[in-house]
Length: 96
Ligand SMILES: [Zn+2]
Image (cartoon, rainbow, N blue to C red):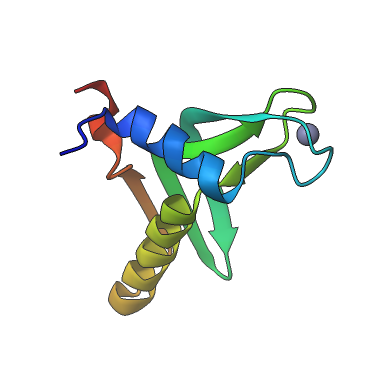
C-alpha cells in the first residue's frame, strides 16, 4: 500500500492534473495559506487552504479538492443563512 504524507500526496496528484501556471506556464508548487473569497453575498475564509502557487509570477489557484471545500462552505452558508464563515481547512492534518 502506498503511504505518503498528505502534502506529498497533493504534490503527486497535482502533477498529474496541473503542474504549470495557467498564466505563464512555469512550474507551480503547493502552498498552504489563508484564503478568503466572497461568493455572491457570502464571505468565506479558510485557514491554511492548500493552493498552487506559480514559482515565477506568484499567481495562485485552487486545487480541485480546495475548490470542493470552498463550494461546500458556500452551501453551508446558504443552508444556514449565514453571511460569513471562517474555518480551518479540513486539510489541516498536513503536519502529521
Ligand atoms: Zn505564473
